[in-house]
Every structure is written in C-alpha cells, then in structure tokens.
Image (cartoon, rainbow, N blue to C red):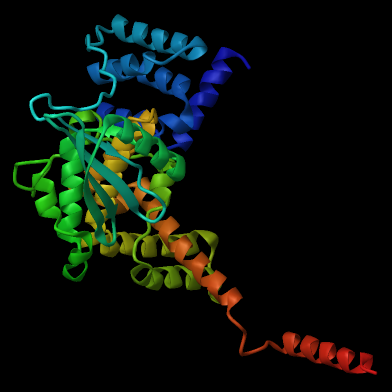
Length: 392
C-alpha cells in the first residue's frame, strides 16, 4: 500500500472510531487519547501533527517515550511538522517510577491486592518497631459488606516476605507497594460502610488502628490518581477499558438492574416489527435511563472507588493506558458529568444488562419446566410409549 493510500486508510479508521478533524483542538486531543489503544500510535501521531497546539506536542512527547520503529519515526515527523508551525514541546522531567511510599519518620508502609471478582481486596498497613520487627494491621475489604476482617500482628521482616509470597501464590496476583495513606483510607472507609450488626465480627478495628496510626481516621481523601493523572483525567475514558478484568467484574445490584434488562430484552423480542435502527434507538433510551437512575448514590460511590483503586493498581503493574482510562472514568463520576453521553459508560451499562439477562436465562435452563410446549408434550408422550413397548 502506498503512503498516500495508507494515510487515507488511517484517517478513515480514526473517523470510524469517533475522531472529528474539524473539532476544537481540545476535543480532538481528548478523542485521540480515548481511541489510542484501538487506533494505534502511528495514526494517532499523524493526526496530532495537524493540531498546532502545545497540548498536541506534549502528547506526542509522551508517546515517544516508549515508541520504536515506524511508530517512533511517525512521531518524529509529527513533531517536526509542529515545529515548522512554531510549536515546541515542553521539556518535561521523566515521570518517576512507582516507588514504595514509606514515611521515614513514621516508619509506615502498605501493601494492596487487586480487587477480585467478588469485590474483595486485601490491605496491609505496616509499621516498623523500635526494638526490631514489624506490626501489621491486616484488613479484608468487601465493596458490598465493608470491612470483613481485621487483625493486628507482630512479625519479622522475613515472616512478612513469606506471607506476601504465599498470599500472592494463592490469589494468583501480586500485592503492590502503596501509599500508606491510601491503604489507611481504604480500611477506614470500609469500616464506616460495615453494617452495625457485622462490626462485632471484625473486632475493635479503631483500637487496632491506633497501634499503627496515631492520627484520627480520615473522612475525606484526595485519591493519588487525581494527582498522578491531573493533566489527562479530564479526557473521555475509552470503551477499551471494559477489557480490563477488574472493571468487567464489577456488578451493580441485580435486583436494581433487572427491570431495565427485562425492558431491553422485551424490545428486542417484540412482535411489533421495528427497523433495526428504531429498535436500537429504543434500547439506547433504556440504557440512558439505567445510567441516570443506577449510577447514583451508593452505586456511584462504589463504582467510582472501584475505578480509582483499579487505576492505581493498573498504573503500578504496567498497564498505563488502562490506568488513564480508569482515572478518567472515576473523574467523570466525581465531577457529576453526563454519563449518558460517554461511550464507556454506555458500554458498561449494556454489559450490566447483559449479565443479568444471561444469569436469568441460565437459571431458567436449570429449573424444572412445569409447563410444556405442544411439541415437547408430543415428544415426551412418544418417549413414554417407546419405554412401554420395550418392557417385557
């Protein structure tokens, strides 16, 4: 394929993914960020080269850090085109690699696990002891039930390493070194959300916590992702974020989702003949209403917290693009954006409706049928007659 044809093909692909060359530079760059994973860095770089703004040059510089081969050459060409128009990329210091956050004066550190399919995660708060060894506050956190368990233990550094290895082996996932303030907030927030009747089962968490942290439990907290991704969290999250298992596994309460799922299903099975376009428009209306009604209150808080903590984990396990998208999605909920107009949230709600319908259909297949269709009744009668004829 010639260069002109290849360029034309790339531009057409970007338009299919939602990029509008005639949009404002700010909107165009937001769109290019959101479709980067689907489009590839080469076409994205070519499009950025036509947007004469410092933000475009900054994004190209960011992309150049990990680029090689033809993609790197395309990025250089795009930067050269911008320089010709008087746009120079800002000199930015390379981002520091994620490090274990330890306060020397307090001797505090933390470890966090990813959130599993059931919405459960592990948080460890660790403090060095003056006489040697460590104190560890171990917490088991559930999105739906709050703080499920909490224990305080004294152990050696060797014991801690061995337990970490064992937990990672059983969970099939790494624990990450984390900002102790984040782990502390996760535990305190979970405790506040624990139903009163269950608090006795997790012991006196607040008393245990004072052995590690002297300060009062935090009631407000600025999540580290909003600092880490301050310049890009305003972009629209990509639909590709739904491929992250940590996000795909999140479930809204099935009872709340079911009426919307049933309505969408009935539209698709309606005896009224509708064109595919009209049918899809009606389903879109159901999805939009579901977003407006279900992503609110406690559901919105739980989803935002899932996105925030997942963005933090993704960033520290090398999944940078997904981390940015998760941070952007969390920011949309935090800022009370119109989620109905954001493709990621539309895809998220469709997945919720589909999951409820699939589970409902599976239950129906497993339950004994009390009413037979005429065809099933005929087959059952024939099978019974055949069994009678085989009897001696």
